[in-house]
Length: 338
Ligand code: FA5
Image (cartoon, helix red, strand yellow):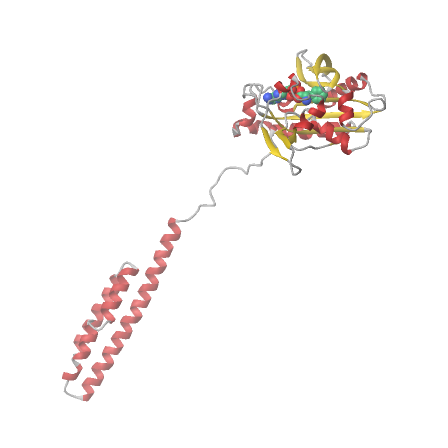
């Protein structure tokens, strides 16, 4: 009997040792320790033993064998569980230690750099920074700038309009601003003159993208309102800005032009040291109707305004051939301007 018990015990232990997965252990566990297991079957034979001592010894040997089997099952289960966990961790591991060369440091986008430098230069010339919303009312973007309903100049500023009913039941028109000029109106309404501000920001037009146009781009607006401001102040400011921003080798000129919100109006260009001219933007003396819309008396106050495209200026300054390159986010292009 003892020999049979020892044999059953050894057989069970070697089966446990040979198990390769936690599932196999589960199956073995119910087979080896269950009622139909070899050791449990041996228990049923105890009654056939002759002496009480033999029964005692065999019973103790079976219990001992069952305890050893249970212990071996626990140990092998823990071992296989740990191995399975280690395999899973290994297969799901995120390699956070991958070597990517020397650490890279980001930098501001070309247009952001230009915008920040423009702000610095104008602050240096005594201007303050003003801001206006990108979503404007028709009144601020057109009406107050001397472009009433049906004004032909509106055709050049096509954008996205949103009709809505205002809380007091009137039909209002909201739009994505087509230029930074509405900030002129907001500043005149909010601030007592003298006013010396620049207002950089994003603007929107229904322009098809090409080498010099984007439907979303950036402008910087300038507005000066004071007593006895003349066209000479405008020309002098543009010249001082040109030299401060581009360098002493650059100069500027004004060419007659037309904008509904300035009278007289001009385009301003800058000349590179190599003699070539770059067109920057528009400017002029603030139209009396615009001063009135801003709540100012044109007899008492006068002023000038200018506005130009920041993207186009950055494009010219850095010799970028196509303005769209600045917005495709190709890292090989962008990292040239750190
Ligand atoms: C204006 O927007 C006037 N508000 C400027 C102004 C302000 C005149 C104050 C007088 C007084 P214009 O439509 O020309 O003007 O645009 C000004 C500049 O924005 C252009 O010279 C150009 O540099 C830039 N620009 C215009 N359209 C685009 C576009 N689709 N993509 C990129 N830049 C553009």
